Image (cartoon, rainbow over all chains, first blue to last red):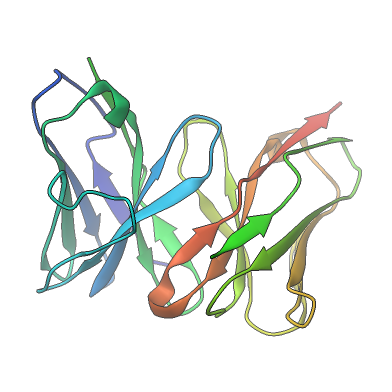
Length: 113
Length: 109
């Protein structure tokens, strides 16, 4: 199956700063990747669809200017949380879909202080 | 809208069999998947049903009835390491996954 590497695994940042999270598909060319967010003891909520070479598609209620997604190659998608606030503290996970399943990165635990 | 329902928690003993049910209401259905997630970790794929019926993978089986918008995950010969959260997820167009709220399974000795 596809191997998905996500970096960093943990990050602490100050309120008002920006954080970039990388998601790499190591052995699978991914024209599409997904970004999810998960708060403690809750489900994974789809934030956006990252499309290689074109604009990301955001789910309702997700601010596209706050969560910038770039998918410049078939193996790399990045999520930048801009002007982070404490309420953005969460677990962010990317995934690469195949025809029947999805492979997830290790996740990034973001803490905004 | 889209919604999935599954029990919030289930407790069972080692060696037992447990069934986690999932009902769904979605627009656009391309299959039902199950994922396991341990505390602090990423979800890992367990099973996928694109068509009605039973899929078996080792100790885990999954069932789907599209006419009833219903599926379940069956875990046999439970082990302590099976204690985790289990999510059903509907696969929609383009490979998007819409997740249920998750079922926390506790396996007791």
